Image: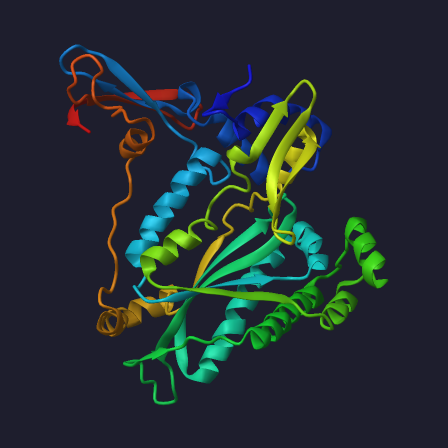
Length: 409
C-alpha cells in the first residue's frame, strides 16, 4: 500500500519498496549508506525504535509517541534538525550583518570528489582560506560559517560551499588591536575566485603526491579525456587553472535572525523535498519529480527509474563523522572563546542587541502547530496526560520498557 502523507509521496515508502532490490543489484554500497537507510526505514516504528507512552490520570487513555531515527537523510527528522540548527545559530550568532557566498568547483571535479570523498575537506579549506587571506590583508578577522551541499536541484552530485561571512570583523593589525570592529561591505569576487582556485588546486596536488598509488577510476578518466584529452589529476588541474571558477557574492543579510533563517534553507536539509515528488509507481518502477533549473530559471520535470532515484539520493549521504557545517575566523572554537567578551561589547555598541535569543520547539509544539491538536491533552477528559512509560531498544536488539511515575511532561 503506497504511503501518502499530506498528499505527497514519501521517500521512506520508495525505499521501503525498492531498497532490497537495489541492494541485490548493487554490491558496492558504502556501510554508512546502509546504516542511514536502515534508520529511515525504522523511523517512527514503535517496534523498532521504541516509544514514549502518555496516560490520562483520569480515564487512563494512552497516547504513544514513537521514537524517530534522528537521521539527516530522513526528510522528517532532517526538517527538525534544520529548525533546531537555526535556533541554535540564532543563539550563537552575533547580531551583525552578513553576506552569503557560494563557492563551486568546476564540473570536471565533481565525479572525482564522488570517488575520493576525503578530498571534500579541501573544499572547506580552500573557500575559507580564500576569504581569510584577503581579510587578513585588509587588517581584520571575520566570522565565517560554511555549509557543504553535494546535490544540485536534479540530485546530481555537485559539491559546493555556502558561506556566511560577517560584513566586517575585529581589527587584526600588527599591533594585535582586537578592540575595534572594522566594517567591510565589499569583497572582491574576482580575487576570491582566483584564490579559491589556487588553494583547492594546491590542496589536491599536495594530497595526490602523498598517495602511494593513485588509481583514477575509468568512469572519471572517460569524462576528463572527452573534455581535455587527459586522464591524470595533475594535468586536469593545469587545464582547470586556465578557466574561470564560480564564486558568487550574494545580497547583504541585515541581522542574525534573518541570516540564520536564510541559510537554514541550505543547512542539514535533505537532498529533495517530498513535495517535489510528483508521481511514484512501484509496479511501473518510476519516480517523477520536479526541480528548478538554475540556468534557465524555469521548473522542469524528470522521470527516472526507482533504482536511479535511490542511487541519486544515497550518493549524498556523507561518511560517518564528516562535518557538513564548519566554522572559521572568530567563529572558530579556538578563537571564539578568547574573543567572546570583546565581540559582544563591539557588536553591542554597533548593532544594539549582541544576540537574539530563541527557544527550540518541542515535538509537542510542532504537532500542535501542524495539526492544531495538542497530542498531550486527553481527547476524552481534556486534561494534560502524564508520561507513563518509555520503551527503547538495547544493544542485544530487544526493547526495554521503563515505567515512569508522577512525571508531567
